[in-house]
Image (cartoon, rainbow, N blue to C red; front, side, top):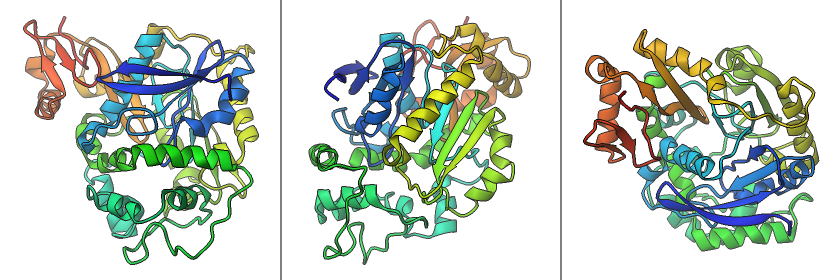
Length: 400
C-alpha cells in the first residue's frame, strides 16, 4: 500500500484525487457508492505487479476530490468529462473501466450493475418507484437533504459498516420509520475481508466529505435520461466481461436474472465475452474476493488482446470509430463524420467529435439537444461557431 502514489489533478474545473501504482498500459478503476479509490487497493497492487499502470480516482463528490453541491453537477457528462480530462493530462492508453466504458478503451470489465438500455419513454426513477415502491433506497435518496439529515442521526461508522457488510440479496427498501441505520442495538459483525484499518479509512473520509456528493449521482439519474435521448438504443461494442455475486442485491432485482441469462443482455452488449456469477458473494465482490477478481481482470486482458501479449496494446484513434460511426449514421443519415463516444453505466453518450457544417441547419434533433446543454449552462459557442462544453474542453461538435 505504501507504494501507491497519490496526486491531486485539476480537471474540468475541479480537483480530482488520484491513486496510482505501476508502469505500463493503464487500467482505470472506478468505484461506486459508498466507496472510494481504496475499494480497488487489492486489484491495483496485483495488476501493477503484472506490468500495468493501475489508476483509481476518487470520483467527484468522494474522498479527497472536490464535491460540487448541486446534483446537476453530477451528470454523466460531468463524470466522463472529469475522466477524459485526466486522460488528456496524462496521456493514458488502453483503459479498462469498471462502471464506465468508452471508445477510448479496448475492453471493459463491469461488476455488479448490469448494462441496461435507455428506456425511450420512462425516466429511471419513475420506473424504479413503480416497480419497487417509494421505500426503495434510490427513491429515498432523491429529495436533496433528506437522506443527509437521516444519515446525520446515525453514527457514520455504523452507517458505513451497514452498507459494506450487507448480505441481504433482496432490493434495499428502507421505510422512514426504520431508517438507514436500522436498530442501534443490533450488532453488525465485521467480515474477514474488511480490516479495522480499512473500515476506519472509509469512516474518516466520509466524516470529512459527507454523503451529498455520492447521493447526487442518484439525484442526477433522471437528468441523465433527459440528456441522452439521442443515444436511445445504442449498443456497447467492445469486449465485455461481467462479474456479479449471486447474493448481490443488484443481481436479485426483479427481472435482472432473466435479462442476463435469457439473451437480453447479449443483445445490447453484442461483444459480451463472459458472465461470471460468483457463488456466496455479495455486492462488493472486488473486496470480498480480491484475488479472484484480480485474476478475472488479468485473464480477460489477455484474451482481449488476442495476440498472447500480456499487456494491453495502445489503441489508435482510427481503430475506435466503428461503433460510433454506426451511431452517428443512424441518427444523422449519411453525414460524413469522425466521432467518439463514452458510456456511463446504462447511459451512453458522445463527448466530442466532428460533423460537417450542414449539421447546424439540417439536424433538428441534435440542435434541440445542444439547446438543452446551453440551457444547463454547460455549453458555449464561440465567435467562430465552435462548440465547447464546460464539462470538458471541446464539446461534441466542431464545425469544419
